[in-house]
View (cartoon, rainbow, N blue to C red):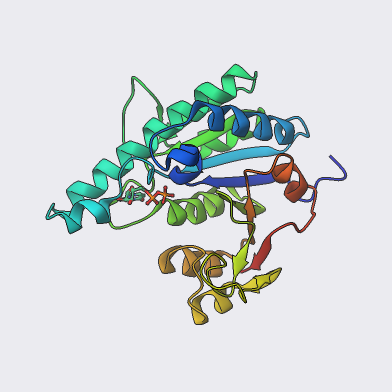
Length: 239
Ligand code: UDP
């Protein structure tokens, strides 16, 4: 454990990162890759909580734009995160990593209800805890859930696993060839420069809780481990 920089982490995996090249749905090859990557960090003795997004299946905002009631559409998004959580749980158990799926929306047949103290106990026992259902409230995001759960469980860091993007850039590197990557930022920079890292609610909560964030490309094998060992391969954002 001595070489490990972060002993308890929240790994935020967006729905998009589970979809692979298809851009939607769940790609089993991607799940298998992520499970292997997470196992390599679990093997180091790191305590891991995972918050998964749902954007690969449904986003509340999209429903609202189509004329749905926003809260109703958001509950659909929260249910999508639980499906992703089940897929991740399956992938992790296939590689022998013990897990528990906890959900902020009660669904006893498929997952435990979210109970903070129980989640911490699972982590201490070496189980990966997957937090499904977002915050359980409409109008929020799973980025905010990551910031919230990180604070609740006393995580040392939030790892923002990105799909093909290796950090935070001054502009979209696909559209602007002069865009440069930041290796370090503060949450205040993110808000002031309007950088697309997480939504403003999540940024301001992270600023309040003072938990650092690392944005990195999860598609490259070995990257989660590098971040946990303290190598700056992406962008580090201090609270
Ligand atoms: N959501 C919500 N409350 C939460 C978390 C998520 O209402 O606390 C809904 C919201 O509609 C969101 C969807 O779930 O669009 C999927 O989550 P998110 O967009 O954060 O997923 P990601 O972009 O990470 O895949």
